[in-house]
Image (cartoon, rainbow, N blue to C red; front, side):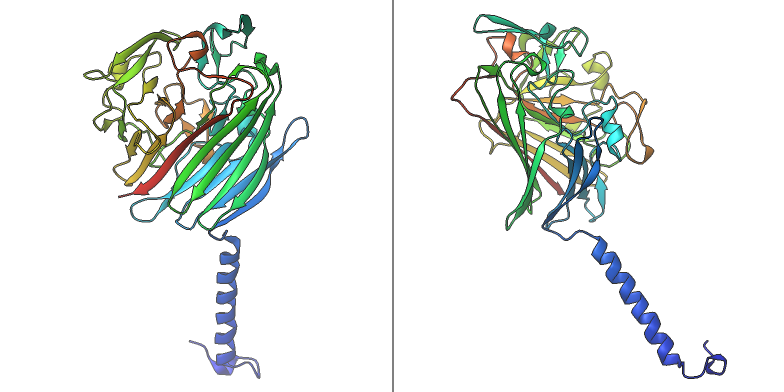
Length: 384
């Protein structure tokens, strides 16, 4: 209880109440001002590359509770805050707190992938009678564009807003001969986060020489925000998958998935048939051949039963690489010091088939001068 007798002359009980009220209001306003408003995009520094190139971090907030952060280094999604069934948000992608983590060796967390996503056997392909040699950065094979793929370059960025979405347009000119690929490839990739909680990846490119192109996005998801993903319930609309050899190169066989560990046409937990799926290390790292006919058809659906979060994927691509985080082995610490162990995240990389430049029976990935490469994939988030 306040005692007016102990107060300085002229300083009333009412004055103290007024001052305290103003302090509370000011504190609340300050907190509100530090929060980014819905429907906005902001840019901040994310550090500097070893060659002194500046790296930016963009924060995109929609009107429906999702906040996404993207860095110009590799077009990487560093954070994706999504509400659960109770409205509580969690970060559902694996990554690092700062640039040094991404500069160190890591398995493509959150990155844009190119010039060719996935593997090319023995780092070689022949096009128009000429053999091209690529880096062998995955055992005997070429993986995700080479030693310095698009995940390791700094992209030009331009943010935008519409009445119902916020987004980021990323641009990069991949020069003739870069990582062994022919042709100057002019690329624009657009990330659009809508108020309907869809995240659209729109890929566009042109070239001045014939070249293979297979662009994708390599975010590692964990819809719970922690733990492993074995209890996540997965559906993939794919009745066939690419059989691979011991180095994960397709043999050419398109095998029926029904009755095998690779059958996700009916919903089942990711962990249900992990051991039976085999591999070294054990788990899924395969291209699933989609039965979908257009981008309007549901290709993949993932549900995390505890949080209720749902991820749905729609794409115009013929395949999706489902990777269950097999190679995470506890040697990497992610955001907040999270030690990343096997199966702590999964990837859904929409794509053409691996090693297509060497396998004529697969859909072609060759882009020619005068043509335009254009593909779209949509990731939709919700909760039940």
